[in-house]
Length: 499
Image (cartoon, rainbow, N blue to C red; front, side, top):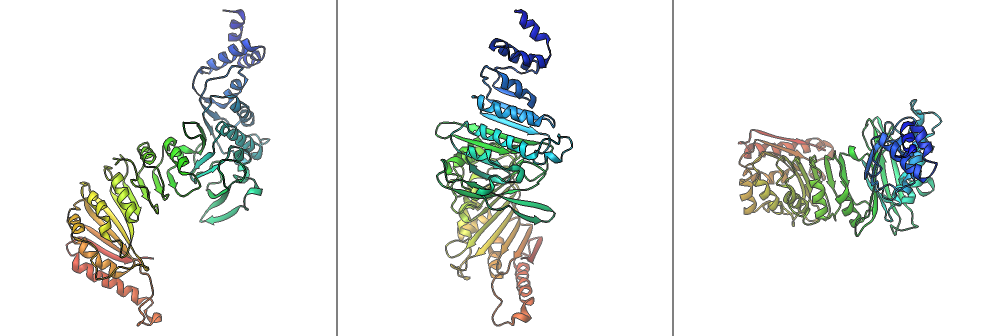
């Protein structure tokens, strides 16, 4: 052991860092000694600790093999630690996963008496955005930004120009004026993110509005939290390269996969890589979602409770193979295709209780189209609650004399032993009455409720002025009479008008 080895082990942390500047040999030993005092190995693939450790990492002359870095920032030394991280990120060639957590909001740092007043919000957020931009530049592809607001894409260089202190993802010259709306007691700010025309990817300009709620936090999620967390991943898997930037990933409870300007290839990669520990609700209104990627995403989120499928033209199948999801309790789907595909994908889930289906009834679509979904429902043994909304198409109406279901649908209705409760929403009394022969077949019904959403004009032979209130009431009474006549065996039967 050399004499200077002994000396470095005996001096203070501050002097150890000073010694690291003497020469390369001193640097390697001094940085190793400093990190060892903080229980960190320079050879570690993953390093987690307070943000002040970034400074010695930055001073290291030897490239570190670190791939995952987790930094916890304190109220003091924010500027110094962020600057150290800004300089360190480009030098950390192996770094692919960066997580930053803050005890309080950077957005309003100047209002926090625990943060030095000389740290302006704009300066701190500027450094912060340059850190994210530097991390994103490690990949040549686009950046996918994920938060409570959903997803959007941008370029790595765009992030450096974000003005989060002014609630802007893009410079003022590239976006419209900020719009403020009041919803009750909370303020909702609509942010517009603009994809510049220049540069690739993507090849064309894209514009999406994002919602920023809870203005006391620098992130863009809805609820309060004790700390603020940012995650950055760089993916360079074969076939696709991109960066994913997540705002408070661990707090996202709802994810909406809509027709946002993200390519199918990018969305497939995101679903393959993204994990949201607190996800409870997944809404899909996008037509093209890769079945294998979606199936893997559902399997990785065991806390998911609600699944909604609203896609105009859903992928078939919805997922590559049926999944018995451990916590899923509610399926909602609109359109006969979505209903059948969602049931085929998730009917094995043991805790499923609520099934919310809606479809447009016309000459080409009836309850018969839902036969595959109800056949799967009939195979369940646990009690179930069914909500069915029937819209009537004015462009392609079905004949009122035409049966609502055929013999096969009737046979399946008789097998729905698990359904104890049904809510039917319809836009006319006649449609409600047409469902009664079908409901009579349910063997174990205990509760039936009708929601009558009357649409259209009042009958021409009536005086609209005199009948404005009496016509809807008369229709409701007519429906109730039919319910009493046909569903006398059901314990709880009710009907009401709703808007």
